[in-house]
Length: 188
Image (cartoon, rainbow, N blue to C red; front, top):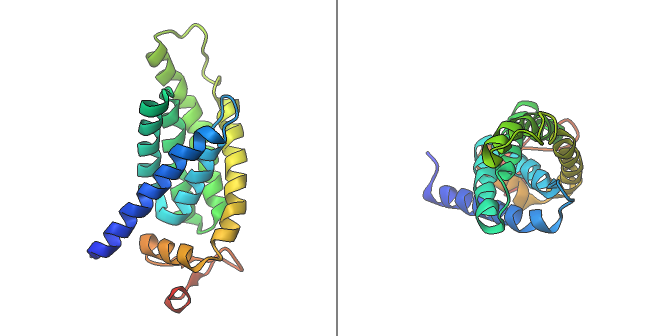
């Protein structure tokens, strides 16, 4: 059973990652793409796992819709990307698997589910077709995942990052040489 201190640390980290996503996504934006959302999704997946990464993406999407007037596309791409990035990382224990999960979740699933959501949101299917969002979502997922990989290479050298990862997973993964679990002695 996690202590109150551990629960509080998890919530604080969740709030911090959500805040970073809400603030940075509109700043580093390419028209029709949100690659910074993919950056944060992959980092959150590696740091916090699928549940907390998905909660972060959901909270961020809702906040961006309420505060910035972004359509429901803020949810369809980010939530699936964060979930599959977390699943990929948990399964493969390397950030490359989180990148693949982000690509599948945001680039493929999120883009395809955006069509019916936007038809419902706009009330018209005349100007939309199933793959209308796919090129932009795939582009954002590739750009964002690649940038996240560069950031993660540096973050995984920081003891605080490793200890936070240990908090969520119960252990931490090392990005090299073969993604072996890090002993508790290295994180204290």
